[in-house]
Amino acid sequence: MKIRTKLFLSLVLVVIVPLLIVGLFLTSQFREKVLDDAVAQSLNNVERIKQRMSQLLAVPIDVASTLMYDKKLYDIANTSFASSGEVFRAYNEYPIFQRIREIHKEIRSIRLYVDNPTLLNNWEYMKADTATQAAYWYKEALDSQMALWYYFDEETNPGTKYLNLVRRIDFLGYRTSGILVISLQRSELTNILMNEPFDTMIIDENNRIVASTRAADEGLELSDVSVGMTLDGFKDGTFNTLVDGKRSKVVVESITPTASRNGLRIVSVIGIEGIVKDANRIGMLGLMIMLFSLIVAIILISFVSKLLANRMLRLSREMNKVASGNLNVALQIDGNDEVGQLARQFNGMMHSIRDLMEEVRESNEQQNLLKIKQKEIKLRMMASQINPHFLFNALESIRMKAHMNKQTEIAQTVKLLGTLMRKNLEIGGSSIKLDDEIEIVRCYLEIQRFRFGDRLGFELDIDPASLQVRVPPLIVQPLVENSVVHGLESKEEGGCVVIRTTMSDDYKKLMIEISDNGEGMTEERLKQLMESLDDMEDREGYRIGMRNVHQRLKLTYGDEYALTLESAPDEGTFIRMTLPAGREAW
Figure 1 (cartoon, rainbow, N blue to C red):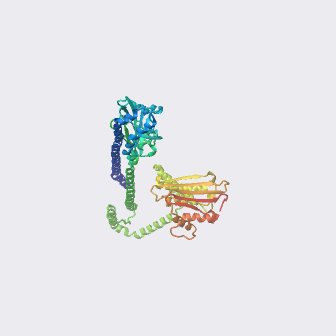
Figure 2: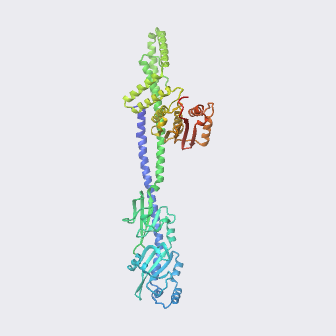
Figure 3: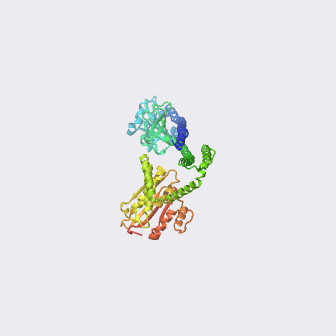
């Protein structure tokens, strides 16, 4: 392995892997702790609601128990009155229901259904009509001696449901009975659930919502609201289930008041994703910090390994010179590390060799010096004779060597570099086809993608009809290079460059658009850039490539064909140019 590979492997095994394991473990434990705390809070809230509900439900139970043994109520319910005046007089002499409502603000209304045709219906003493007698709650009350709790419409306010205590009252001595209905105020139930942090509901035995933290859900079936679940098979306790397709914890607690045959249930729904959101955010923040640390470590390792490799490479080159017969070498490697010490030992060894050979070389020194000078001149002449053809052959040799070593990615990149250089050298002062310009852009982007990896993406949306249009050379590639270098290079997550060409409906104009989702520019920076494009003098800080393209367009076609730019911070940059499509040469 190379030193760089060893350093990277050590970093991964000694630092990255342990950090990932510890980070994942701590994040998982933190998530569980947050979720447990939320469940504990929900249980405390449900217990508090249960206590308050028990206190509230105890009021109508006590009232019902009192009325069951009220002799005056027995007499009014079973007396056959001779006239309406006697009925009104009896009602006024014993306004028991009004007094109870004045004392207990929790009670909205009290109704007594009796089978006494001489009574008048005043919404307190009522004769049970056919519809009432057919109601399920009425039938259930007739068959039970215990209190029942039902949620149904009140006759005094049709269309509005209330929680009602329903209980049969047996009038001892008269051998008759009546049905007592006590309705609770809706606001009392709503106040109990006020300020609950989780979706909390009170439901009856038929899964109908009596009260909820979301007022719009009251009166609906549990399966019809956005919670989208039923409690069939759920006993009291905490359960893991799916609510609207999302993982949730459901806390269920039953309330069965004293002397009641049925009761209510408190349901609290805790969305797991919402609870652990902060834990996930902290975990993501930790991951970002680890990623940043990893990048810094990679940069440092790359720098150190490159520095070390370069010093060793210099030592290797000097040793190769010695192997080829050149003993007049001296290493200039500073530092007190092993490489610096080795360089000094190498220099000492060479000095000893030169001393031993001094007598032998003394007679031939001038001749050797002359040969060395001639060799240097020859090397300079040979170096000056390097031409593009030699460079292309060298690149092709590198590509073939990489291909034979199965380094396909490097081979492809070298091939693209050769293609890009060849096309740049082939460009003269005349126009080229857009097809050739797009090929240069494609080669450039492929090479840049080899550098940036998955951080750089690009899309070529080219109208086939535009490929044969002739355009000035290198009019697209500098703009694409600006998008990559200034828009995406410093953006950690990378981005995408889109090149799009279209023809006008009459095929007389060619539209070229280059856009990226990079850092973008502020309005002030965009204004400065547009001013610099029209400045004919070179100044520091100008974007030379974009300015060159802008001024060539104006000189070639006129001011109306200049570049147009749009940009916003963190939203990217959009460049458009429009060219005439009918000219063959410029």
